[in-house]
Length: 141
Image (cartoon, rainbow, N blue to C red; front, side, top):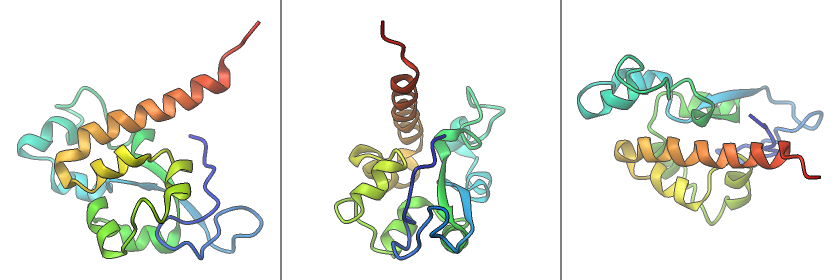
């Protein structure tokens, strides 16, 4: 994953870039592992339980983004829609930060849909990551 975020998504006053950042940067699970484990039953088991899912989405790069340790601890085991709502993080106000962590307007909308948006979010974000990667490795003659 290209970790290109220079500002923290939850707290824009925290710089993530080296050497400006005094804060430790972590790869954060967008849908936290503990939340996924606690909700891996019923309909959600088909995507959250790696034994039932086609792949391990929870540990995939489609579920990771850089975040400061402080923000990671605030997000911890919350559904993304919950933390975005609690912190008043709207797409239009943080669009540039969202874009560099491969969350476009559609992905943001899926995040704020709660549990029902999980499969589409991961698939959509995986396609955004893959498109970026492929554009970087394409050789043109």
